[in-house]
Image 1: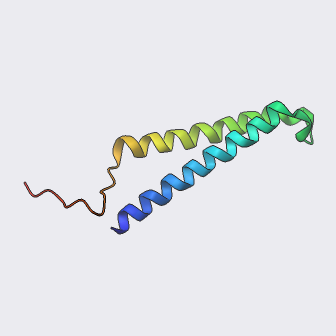
Image 2: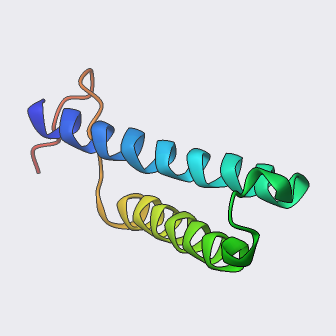
Image 3: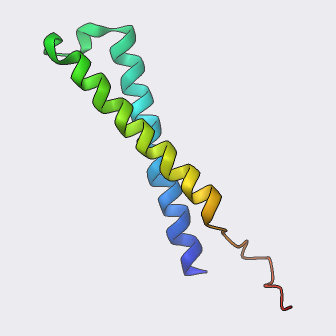
Length: 78
């Protein structure tokens, strides 16, 4: 189903954003010299936390509100 493809694409997008934010946060927190402008490290960490939070919220929203039908699953006719 086409709708499932869009939902799967959204999951992939938000999971990628989450992983990117986590990877960058880990780098910055374990190696602060990775940030060129040390005076901006707090702002950069804050920005990454916001991106992480947005991605996690979007994934949770999809989980709680969108049901992806398995293509092998036949719709139930009540």
